[in-house]
Length: 214
Image 1 (cartoon, one colour):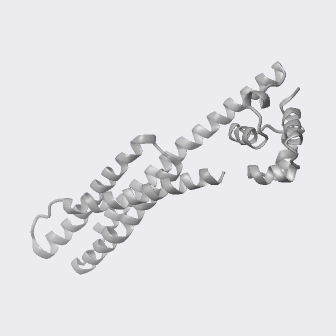
Image 2: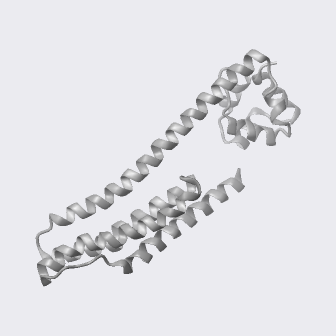
Image 3: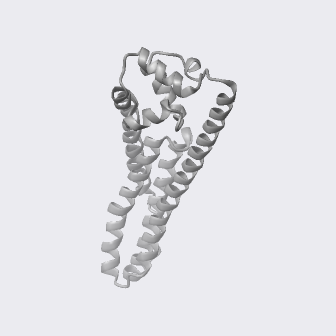
């Protein structure tokens, strides 16, 4: 028996319509129909959800003919590889965007000629742009569980970026207005770190809440 027929049988035995199953699984009724007719395959997450919804084991749902089993395994492997590839791209994009905003904020600062304007710009960056960027990046890491347990190193990195961001922006103001050397302001380190931790914690809370609602 092919997986589509097994899925259909399990749904019928659970006394659920395609509409009811689709609503519980978070997909369209047409998707359920395509799975049951063998037009497409469910991903592994959907199979796990169906196992719970139909009160049957994973072994039962995946217990199809050998040829079909091999085809489905190939599909799952391809699907998993695609998810991993997209996950790596998303992580890289998040990293580059975060660093890009930090670098652009610093570079743009050097284009400001007036000391007074530069000082105002520095305040906007240090207390607006960078904290929002760190919070958003940490929130995404928490929700998507990027980098596993190593994601908790991110607040340290963001704290350092905040401290150094203050240094590279304020150094010009100091040189121009007061003719003195400005050193990295590590009093800003805990601020950047705290903002990142808050974003991470909220992201993880949202992730856990979504899991409870599945």
